[in-house]
Image (cartoon, rainbow, N blue to C red):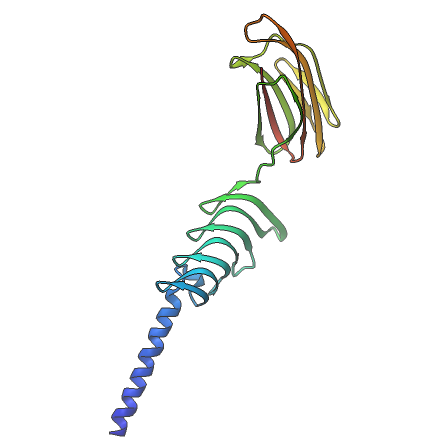
Length: 225
């Protein structure tokens, strides 16, 4: 009888431990984080703030068993990402620290579906605007080039006279309809002044547009009259 009771007890505790382990590993649905979890739960899954540890580790916000929201993920090799997540993937704004050729490398900016899109765009600050219908700033790529285009009725504005462009660094260029600066330093202040006819070509007025660039890159500025 004692042997039967002992055998029953062993089977009971083994089943209990296996059930507990299954529940523990089932709280996080990312395999590399499924060894242990401590934090908020909803319907048996990690949901809310918590910490998961496995081959990798993650501390932050979860949703339905996945990293979702803001948190820090550390990979087994020491790489780390701190930022926004969506359904277990890096999505939103964040910083990824890694090593390339044994050199510390940082990817800081925007992510989507676990892929790096590039740095978050910091648009230039307008310092002065006079007689401009609208303007557009576009960060085209990495670099140190600024190109300025004056537009009217959807085309290049050919009625411009008395054009003056000043910048506090870099080299000014003017090539056909393309004008601007290259090799400028950050922060970079630029002033554009010119006289243009109105859309009906019945009157002329003076345009003034001044702005400051604080993020390096190849920028395009469109001024519409």
